[in-house]
Image 1: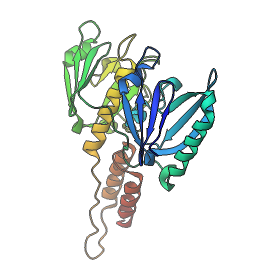
Image 2: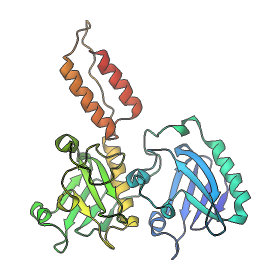
Image 3: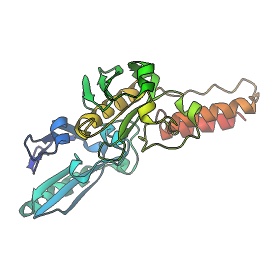
Image 4: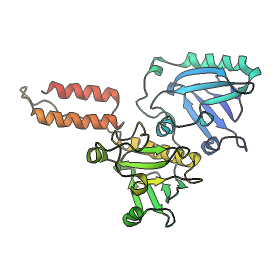
Length: 307
């Protein structure tokens, strides 16, 4: 569209295939917005657009991303407060007519895939290197490795005994981020295979859609694969972009198509126990977000055909 729509805290610049959201700097601008700076959102990443009345003489134009399209929202797993939603543009009420025009223009650009979850991340994650201070340690990410360096004033004896930690993203299956604005916030890294060894444990907090389906039994303050938050430690504007960057790197590193072995020539049947095990493994990959819905359905059908 080639137009610019300036609102409170942000400006939307419309291009032929995407909208560039530039966040303002200032005392009243949410710190998460300032941390993100700007985000380019392809129209193909959107599922819907709404325009609703806001507070104190404002209207709110909101673009709703498709599930799975934005690593930031996937990491947040529904925990962001309304004021921290980067897809909301707040405008003075007198600009409602102009906002309605852009809302209609955006709706016209949505394709048939808008109603379906995205099969890959379509919005870029914040860029590494990144770091932040948690209550019990310092977390760092250079694009390929996540590191935790413990603080003697906050880390538990279990973490001191385990020592400082380094995690290659290729060995991770996902992340769990619990907002520091909730009770007992934390960032947990989920190693590959953790779901198998810890299945059946009680949940300890919200799990990212790209994380493993099972949640570790160990409490975050005792888990060397976690850092815990506290007052002033691991704030949303630092820990959430960090979590999103790690999540995007994990998905990019491990989104390898699953291939099922071909049925032997002559139509010989495979061992049903072997097929069941492979289907279980395929299901784990699907729940962990490493296999798309389409890939899962196709490979499951191939495995069933081998019985």
